[in-house]
Length: 312
Length: 270
Figure 1 (cartoon, rainbow over the protein chains, first blue to last red):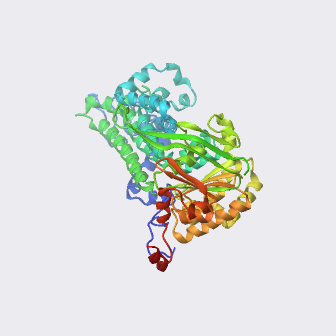
Figure 2 (tube, each protein chain N blue to C red):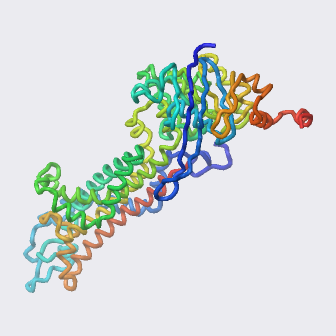
Figure 3 (cartoon, one colour):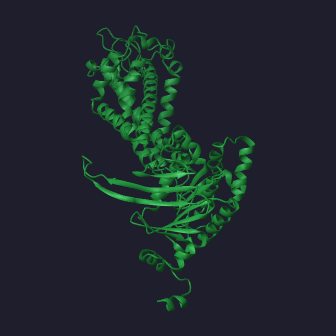
């Protein structure tokens, strides 16, 4: 390109379409990614290698150490084998934190897939078909969005059948699918609204009209022409939704709605709260873990927003 | 003359400009108001008028890209508005459109090969045949075959318009609506695209509805001309007759708006 005006993306200064050429480069080089990505990688390492990284030799978040509590019942403070101290039953906080990362991430990611699939589908259909389909779906979306998130999620976890817990792969992962569905179901509305808006403007573009003029089916137009062009938005929102999901999971398990035997950051805060003055490390470490995880996803989400930003 | 390929009868399209919460009682824009004309096989009919005169809407109605308020359009004797969706999808391969805006006309996430290939796929062409046909259609619009791997945004306006024409031709249509295909291009490219269209029209004996506000282009390309104003058809006639002796005042005004390329002649005319 010999033109003196060279845009940072390498292509012409005008006529940038929705294409995301160089978007990956922009994302990787983004300053927020440089903080967010290492944080996320660390979190994933913790979650995946929770076993080997946890306190030897038990590697068990439920193991109660004989010296975990002193003679007065005060949990062991950080140090002397306890990296982050012991909790109110004498279990290792560091070990529980690692297993908590596993739980928190898997629920947040599964819920993210749930909400992304619902939100994208509803948004695509409402935006593309318009008319009564749009009115119905938009009303439903609005009704769900107007309900208090936590209350709706609590209701759902109680209403959904107990038997779901035995469903593979959730049983194997010791995950409560009811929690996943509840969280996924309360966070899809934002995605659906954003997708609908994008589809509304996309379907006015001439390449959609060209596809119709060729006699392409609606399914093909939706999946081949519209979906690829809303994908950048969907990806960004999915990452941001994961941050929200981590918070929701923590909130719900703080309220005691998670699986009782699995350590979770939310339930750790709830357990440690009454002992905050004598053993603050229990609450603080779980709280810090939540903050770091949420910040990681938010930073990455913002970096994505800016690097996938579409120009025309 | 032979029987018309396309018959447009009393075509009406109203757009309601909805306003306010209730959306009722809004203004109605009569974009196309009781328009009737015929298009004969193998001819190029120019549809001219100022912007907002309803010519693009008429073009889209003929292809049923828009639903009419009332009226009738037949293609080879079949009424396209009464046709079941599946039959219509089949018929669409016979009638194609070339768009005004060569920037918005392509999915930015598809390569040129995929764009043309998709049209070929509708005719059941796949595999190696699809690749060789893609090259053939690119060649037809004077583009090298290797552009198939590139994205539309890598090309200039004129090149994109060629790709748009190749996509339209790929389903081997009989009839093409060219919706202001050159008005977004600069003057030097305009001539190339007009010549290309003229050449293809003759070579493939296409029937064409050429929509334009630029009468100098229409004069080169069209056998007959239909003039629209405020959604109504004001005059239809042979190209030569209209340019030599326009019957209507409006047509005369449009003709007077053609710039005269020779300054000396322009002074004499004034």
